[in-house]
Image (cartoon, rainbow, N blue to C red):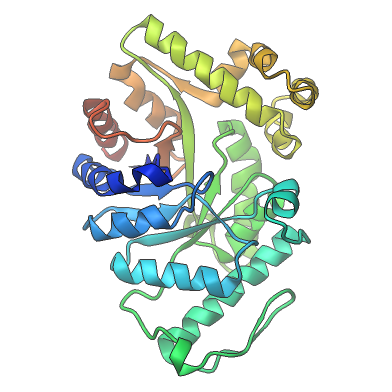
Length: 340
């Protein structure tokens, strides 16, 4: 199992990316994942690719539907060339409200649309790599024009891994059918992964003549650790707040359902609708905290992560982003513990 790192970045700190990726590579992280929340997820990876040699670089995740498959294909092609084959394209659908109201983009049949989206990108990449005529005719996307002026031409590593993110069964099956990896949402439990995610990926893989081992499973984890009880308690407080936020979202209720906690999700949704944010974390019980977080002192957190996710995930990273110079000894210990 590989230990990866999450990149904390905003527009003001793009100048820090070079130092962050060099430090991450020195520590031995397997990959550096860039989110797409307040800022574009591709820009920091351009800098990271230029200032690193070995570490893999991925989006976690780039939102697909507001971008044409052609636009996404071009972003990925250029980053794959710049990184000399170290780029991983992580894609997400987002949820209906954000696609329609934040991005002003149509929302329709997200699983089928994403399947078509991925096939369209691969057709575009094939045309660029081989020079074959572009003639993709899909359910939602059609790409039939590629002139030499707009064709970037072949690259040395044209097989770009595609990971998708999801929570419910449909996207997990799609990952098994057509993807190289699956980003499991940070709000998860091992029971949810074992009972929902892995069987659906395996079923999707079997339908396409593949197996579960063909799909890399990766997720960030809520890690609660510290040098003393005070630090552990402070991280538990932060974890309760984050868990209550995710658990209030109906899309993620499938995770709660694995443990019979749907009623807590409904209560959290009502509080969120009334904007009573400060009251929400009190509904996250100690039992829920044990299920949704990995808790251990600093000297044993590596073993705890390995015990929790060994044989379940292929790659894991902390929900807390990597900051060079902060707990570097801990990070090195975790890398060694998970890779041993």
